Length: 263
Ligand SMILES: [Zn+2]
Image (cartoon, rainbow, N blue to C red; front, side, top):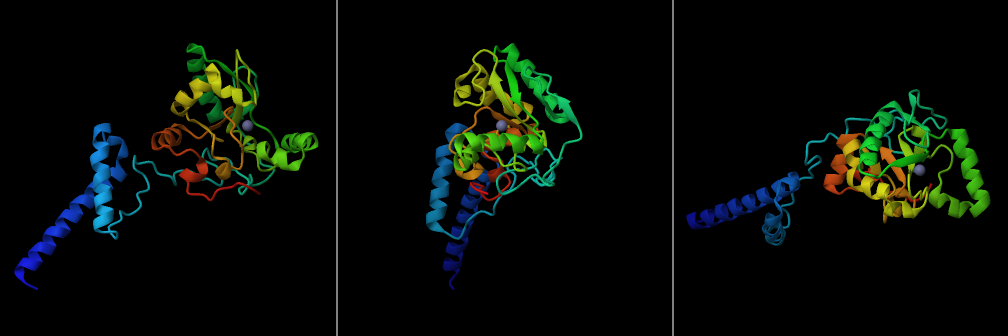
């Protein structure tokens, strides 16, 4: 190899590394990239992919430093527990030991941590003229059993399973989930909740209190449930804000779990 050839290869590698560096930086800290810089970064990514397809960045788990292993996703006492049609509450007859009154209109109970956050969220929403109440929150295994059977009697199993969980598979049993209605417009358990003052306020602010919309529009194939703008899940501020900022819609996706469209 001639000196010139070595020099040329070294030069190409240096450029490739620099471009890869830009790419990694864009993946690691997407939020630090100001809007006007988005286009040039995209050009670098395209150039890198064309020039050297093998120069893929290693997967980056936590762009904003969140540790996605910080809490269990299996333990029903954990604020990050993921319950879906593939992941029943374990044990199936689990009952939280710190159930507390929600402290908002409608009553019901949630875990103590969820209740504390909920009261703060309610106060802020009410201040903004977007007050809400809770139509249901914690539901025991036996309550869910009766409820599901009631829906099956009304609509048949196939339809009931698009909006109601089998006993032992309901997130409500963890005490971290609740269904909300608008204090003025109502819209309990109906999609019109999304257009109420409370529904709109929650989409904007709930993450700052640690709540996520658990069954978003368009995520049925992942969550197993149709859009439920009224169903909110407490996961803590860190994870809720992370999901909002990273535009990750579901717990399944943020934790890398398989979709759970069916049992
Ligand atoms: Zn619900």
